[in-house]
Image 1 (tube, rainbow, N blue to C red):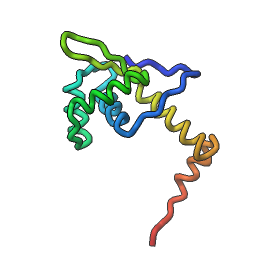
Image 2: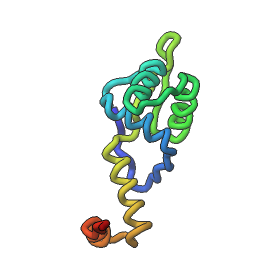
Image 3: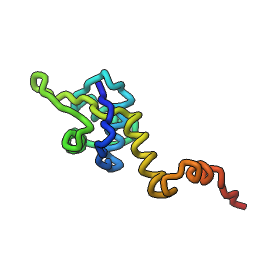
Image 4: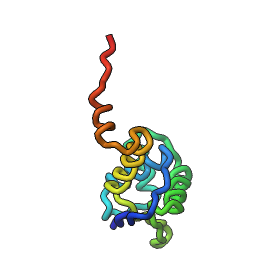
Length: 120
């Protein structure tokens, strides 16, 4: 089960590829624990990639090191379990974005969404 991020714990940034792997795992459901081959198949199908299992394995190892996933051995297969919920990740990412681009002002962020330029 995904744990809630502690308030004082800073999440490490994810690369675009790591985000795709995490999104694949989050979409599978936090209760579902998957092995490398299943994760590789799902991420390739969902995002039209042709990543080899070794490539996905590298991303998974990085995610374990960054504390987004836990891995354990089940027979001859490593199983991966989500540790950070999608909700916590999205919240943290949004807060960082707003802090950087809008000086922490949610109102300024929302106002910027309303300022769509019409190209003519």
